[in-house]
Length: 288
Image (cartoon, rainbow, N blue to C red; front, side, top):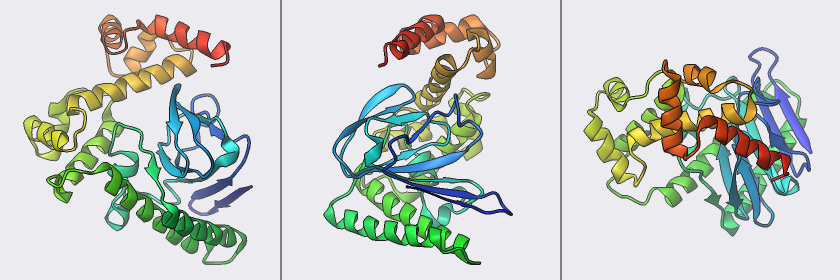
């Protein structure tokens, strides 16, 4: 089942996909124009999810937040329930104070989060899911408001569970977590042109050392590693899903010296850009 809501005025969209055998998202090849955040719920057995070419285990009864620009496919999409929405429908940045999620579910961590649901939480979400389905069918003047309210409720539930499961350090106070969330959001918006920790530290009115200390409390990668990993991730996507040359990709990512970028890419991945592209093409042609 696929349910859709589109606001004719704002172009806000909310999609609900339930147990569809062809559900996926191929951002670079097919879906680039669609800027949807995704909350995917595996309500079946464990399966494999492939995110940007990397296979990961998707445990049963877990929720996986996915970014707007991620390519993903599921081994068993018929066991997936997914909510997808764009900025025009609900902007998590503008409403961060309401749901406290902008940097946590989608921008706060370099790691993929699989948020587990116990039996009570499964029942709660199943009840909420049924209300979602009912509201998609109610075509009236307050449909958008009702769907937004329920989406907000879903985000709050998942955010609370995620914080319980991924934030173990008591010394990481809300103000420090807020700095981390803002840092990661800024990296997402600026990684193509800003490659140094100093740039982000200046924007946040913090020293690079203070940022490093906050990330250490989170048991997270260093700020520089977060920046570099985001650059490498985008480079991999462009190598896998476009025909751009390594030189063009280097310029796209803010490097005037293509050879410097190639050396940087090889240091991070152990592959030269051309070798990475060839290796991924071989895997794809083999059906892996």
